[in-house]
Image (cartoon, rainbow, N blue to C red; front, side, top):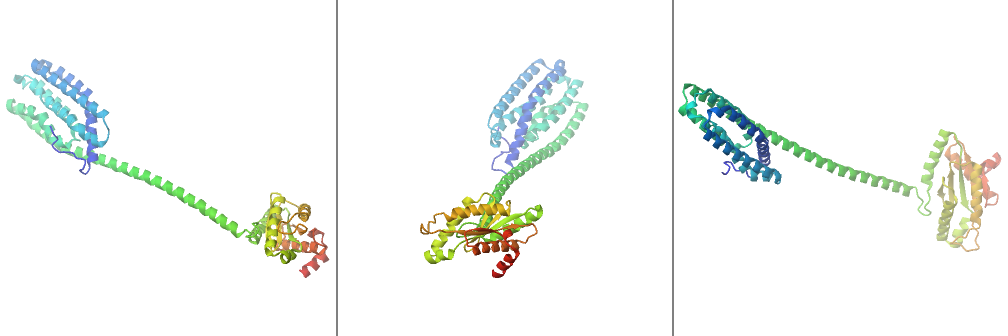
Length: 418
């Protein structure tokens, strides 16, 4: 038998319909043990009031239908669980359930026709109303068989009451008709409630899937944003490095020097420790440019920075102050320690081979070192280092001079001359 209302996947809400049919098939499968138990109890009740042949035929048919129902549902449960596969197995399950309904209604036929006024007959009708109420819950999901379900279940019992019943049975018939009307209204409303519940579940599932997809997209966007932030941070750091890097020599420039001077001064003020800085200068560097050209002079400055970077210990910072003048910041050294270190470097440079200059050329360096107190302004410290450098030049160059070794009159004289 084909369904009265085809359920096509092209129709709106077909997924909800498929879930309702799955609900129907699942309840039908779970009801098989209960149906077998109910049949056994019903047989025990009407055994002495039934025609043996009718009862045997009824039991045989009921057993065949239940076996067929079990086999069809088992095949469905082993098949693909895609919603579309539900429609392929629904018809066979539905037909078995309708056959069950027809057999439940035929229990009146099993009773002896001359015993319609027997109290057991009324008890059987009460039993059928209970079974019918339970079946309504199961069949509510199948909107295409509601009318057929009522007809197959109650056709024979109602006809028996109408044709053979006395006044009492006719009153029972009226009560049954009222009961069936209530059940019909319940069936429609319960089916609507089931459909709305499934529809709401699908909406919640779709919303959850959308939230998961949105979460994945937000995670991807967050990762992209973090990557962009890292790239921006690296770009800013690179820009800062380029802004504070001397284009010719590659060491820090005066912009970076000012920032680091303020940082050293703040650290010294917080800790109370002294620190040292040195200003150094290549001797007679103007002669290099005049004699060998500015390209040779640039090469000398580049080689100087390379050698100083390799000779200075970690923690000391080298800055190009301008021209051939450089500044070294030593946060963890005293004035004398920095002076000894620079004097060793000075001696090495005096014997170094300068690639852009003749082999006979001796390029020397002079330096001035100053100890910076926590309360000393950075500009004052730079001025003292410059005075010490000037003193080294004045004393014959190729030497390191300490600002603390200069007498006050000498400092005043150097200050006026500078």
